[in-house]
Image 1: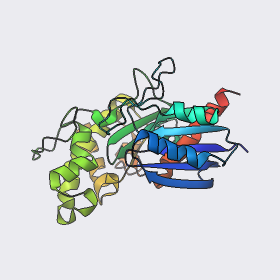
Image 2: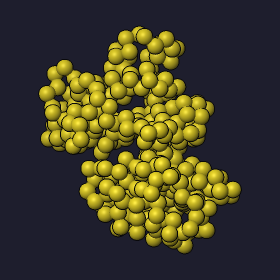
Image 3: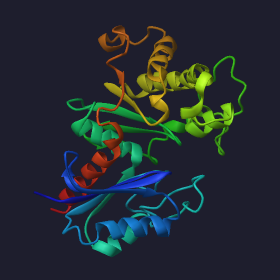
Image 4: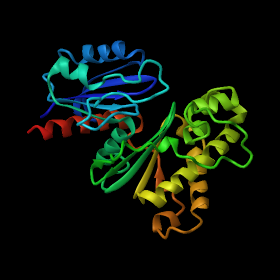
Length: 296
């Protein structure tokens, strides 16, 4: 059986694992995301001596340069994460191990993982949205992650705010885009406390965040027509947020899309990840497998 290295590279923490499937991990480690040199060095240290590995897959926070013809392939694009703009992710790992390396965004990775083993299993076309430190979206069609001009940047959709919302937004690029209105940092800035510590403000915070999220999901239904939308991330775990987002999505669609899934109230259409927090590490295993297969 093939043995793969798996990296879920988040803006807050890195998770590294060795295995072949989410149920067959031989080792796993988590550590904070600090500087590129330090963080990638710790990943390399973890994988050293745990092989031989057939390939390594990386589900990495973005934006990323994924054009293999570009000299910047495998590097991080413009990001508010200090020190990470332009960081080379693929190069150090390839130099250390000389094996195939597969890389994609963390959310495309999570979509691949959920599509193989989770809430999207058996479906051809799914979207995975994470709502946490940032907001991102991955799109998978028949097992292939969507790429084009770049990769999907669903977190920066321009969406309407709640009618009673006066918050300017927290995105350094766009202010009140989806990420600027509904991400974890946006909630903390708006309410003066992290999402998990809101107490009596939780219901109001959920209402304000679910409104732009619901409109974003309605836009995705109309443009991509996915068979299922999976809503993950720490903020998505706030009590009532997924339910409120479903309601807003249906209101925004206005009955236009004729689908049995939506007629049932969307409870089987907009769902939580089946793999929970393991979606990204599972997706990185898929990316490693794909990288190994391409060289066979």
